[in-house]
Length: 333
Image (cartoon, rainbow, N blue to C red; front, side, top):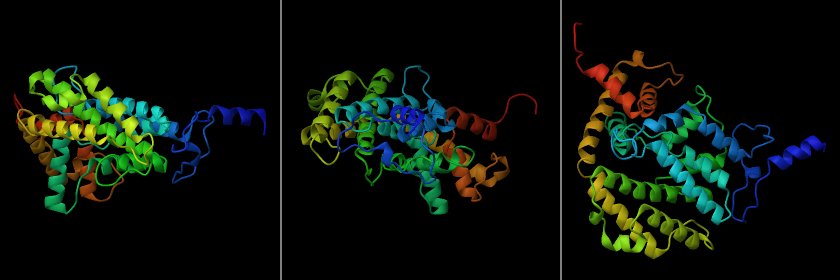
């Protein structure tokens, strides 16, 4: 081999990994590509995701509260970055592939609808009721990277990254331990950070948090994240899956149920969610009746085309289109 080829091989090599880690050298793409001299296959996947329009739109998509006015509330973008940070910490401690967990984390919510889970529920309802289909944001995230980005050409990501994106939620389990890390850290991130946002919004007071779970996991976001991440590392160190210890896992599930009861399914989030669902349903039905108003796309099926367009909207763009379409304008016509 020439000095140039040896140099390239060395530059693109991975750091030492444990025996359970996924190897970028073994990664498979649907369309084969020559290797990059500077980046592994998973690093290239991460970079491709970071440069997508869908990733940039995450900064204006809701995490919990619909279109919050404060500057310090989480968005889908900050949530994604936090999931990536937690996942990389776990991966490094377990000697798994940090590049793979980062790529999966960066891509896991690309297909999320506007207005968080309220928008996802609205799209699922309208598709189920009128068209016999379902909407799941994990499947839509996979569609974004496979079919929608790059003007319909997709990103040609590796199989391992696509598997992690698809199975970060739902009934299936990721094929790699790295994908399993992201699946668990996604839940740990949103529960704890949503607590912080709920406290900031006055939806919860510190004394409202369940005492038993606070004693087990910690009184602050930092304490809880430290405890949950450390527990995951210790419980998974000798296991063939990524998991939590029984005690910590049960405490976390109880804390998650508390958040559903007191925040996600309670006012004011529930009131705003109802309004958000109405906006998404109205937009879907209107664009289905007026396909000439959709941007150009290669997708021939009108229902899929409308789903792609509405699911890709940010909160503020959805509200702007809704006002323009359904609300009377002031002044002379």
